[in-house]
Image (cartoon, rainbow, N blue to C red; front, side, top):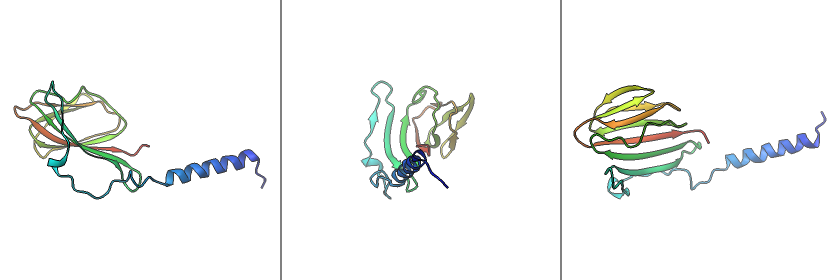
Length: 144
């Protein structure tokens, strides 16, 4: 079997790219860790009083990107306009009553409820209760 220089160069380029992808930056892999609520920096929107805390963002050992954040949402508000994105999200409601809308279909959920939002589906959330809603969002993004 004969290989041209182009074939050999293509092989080496593919090999080098695969090696680079396989060598993960150990600093980007999330370590085992407990995240104390009191230690998480809070960002408060001065106009809406929406509070958010980034818990973590990084990769699993297999290179799957994940992130987690918490939000405290005042009654009657949405954290942002409806939107869509490539990553999936899992929404965990701790307190309050939230209406989750996915592709135009609204569902009202209460404490302890979970919502899964699939990739590229238009979605939004709104606190429809009379007390602040507190929730966690786990972002799953395996697309690198």
